[in-house]
Image 1 (tube, rainbow, N blue to C red):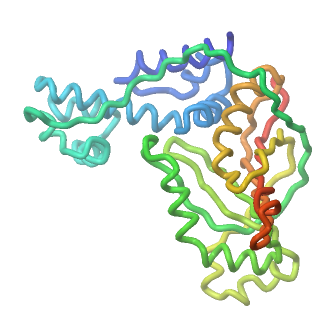
Image 2 (image 1 turned 135 degrees about the horizontal axis):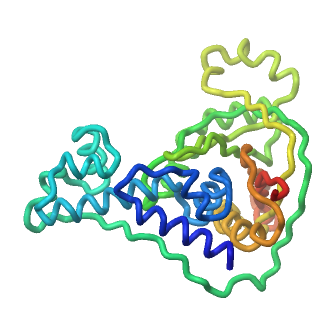
Length: 301
């Protein structure tokens, strides 16, 4: 129960100080964990970052205050943590779809984002295989997108990014000569989101001539140094579309395995490996796709 109690205490602390400047270290202390560990666990369990939760709760509350007709826009903006009415108005419009002044009008349609409450439900009792692996340092070459924004529209960014970068994907696939596997990397986690990469390990010859062969196109890519470290590794089921299973598996690792494991999440890139064998017309091969999830961990102090 300490795990559940800690997260709920942190959420209660946020709600009690929503109109004040929030200290993320103080929030994490309520959960009995480090700031990084709490924020990563929060984002995996909830599907959005702590910063996004705070922003949405504040803008939801701002809509109520303005609709009541008594609060000044500048006062509400400051309570929400915005330095100017203009930046507040931009965020308010993006969230509610109307301006702060329009929110005062009769019949204005506002968006509500309710507070989180942790409920204890019976989970587990299901098999989840995992392994702890010390991974060596590795070099990956990839291209990124900063995933940010609306927690109610999660997933759209990933879909658009995958569809809009086919050329970048095909170029790296060809140079790596790996046709049945691709890496994903999630790193640089912050209040607004994280950097997401599709990446490949390139052979030495491809790295040496990378800029020469690709010219200006090479600027679209980043060479990622992944440090050596310990990971908990889990795999999805084998099926045609394993990417649909990844978010739930990540949540299960954090909700079911992590609390009793004696490990905590450490500040390092999160790695995914998509195994994608394909043979036209071979149903058995095409249903053998799966994803690995590598969550960086360290022994709890």
